[in-house]
Amino acid sequence: MPSNNKNDFEPVYSRRADKKPHYKKGNKKKRRIIGWSVFLVFLLIVGSGLVWGYGAYKSAKKTFTQTYDSTNIQKARNVSSVIQKGKPLSILLLGTDTGALGRHDTGRTDTMIVATINPKKKTIHLTSIARDTQVNVPGDTQQYEKINAAYTIGGPGTAVKTVQNLLDIPIDFYAIINMGGLETMVNAVGGVDVVPPLTFQYGHANVVKGKKTHLNGQQALDYARMRDDDPRGDYGRQARQRQIIKKLVMKGLNVTSLPRYKSILSSLKGNMKTDMTFDDMIAVRAKYGDATHHIKSQTLQGENAMIDGLSYQVVPQTELLRVSNDIRSTLGLSKSKKLQSSQTQTDTDASTTTGTDTTGNQSSYNGY
Image 1: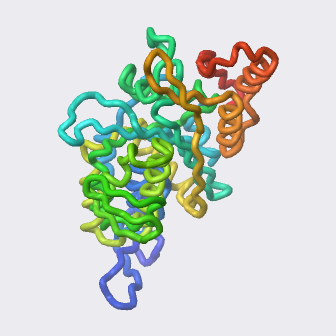
Image 2: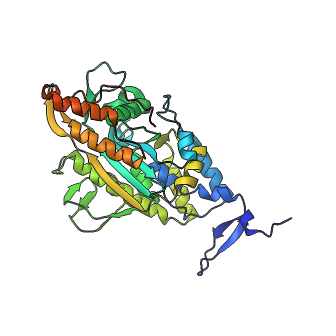
Image 3: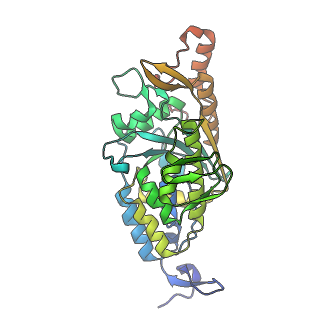
């Protein structure tokens, strides 16, 4: 017998001019899922302004089941408890060019962003790490490597451990995105508008500083990829990548058509892997879904150094401590004792300041 209670139904927006919802039978919880696709791609929580329905729910579940890929490492803290209590969450966003431009090797992660989501403050913080940052990679035979090699050496688990050790922070989830798939994803949301910080032409991107420009997928990919002609080098590229991410989130908030939603889902296939399960997505969407009100960005700033004939970014201990404590603050954690201890030792004995010992000690996560 049909129910007379609207709570037993889910809204489906009609094409009528008044845009008032009518109701279709279904599970109310399922409408919280759709729209999550954009969050998983760009590790940002987006609103759920899409058309809901059981078919869309099934499509989302099927797609995200295919994106799951465990790191096979023990989590730094009890993530299930973190989500259940609605505590701030951290996700490592990795971007690789594997498969793009005819490349089919494992690839390095030329994009590394730590995203922290605080549901109570309704904020998202993005911290970029330069690809040439000098680190010790767990399990590697070399004394030090560039951080973008961690994924190549040991997969996402090694990349996660490397970032955890570098900044003395817990990483709750990771997601790796094929940057070649960025083209399809941007097209799926109808392109993005940006105001370029500089004038340049690179590939299909031809932009003028300060002039609002609409970018399709191909243009956005080149816009986010250019580095050599930017006076700020990789740091300038990071800023433009974060710019694209933010714009994608805003476009995701306004996606209201089922065909467009299906295009977003299609763009994920083969282009993303994450250790967030579909059940995790449901739980996180319910707890963190309003955290798009304020998006802030920062960069872990290193210094140029030539070591054994290779160019590195060596991060001063003071900068590591600053960024670590900033991230830990967004996660509701106390200041880093590990990095503070290293800073004290560095201040005491300046002869040990080589920039190569900033990540050698295993982090302790007992306080998480």
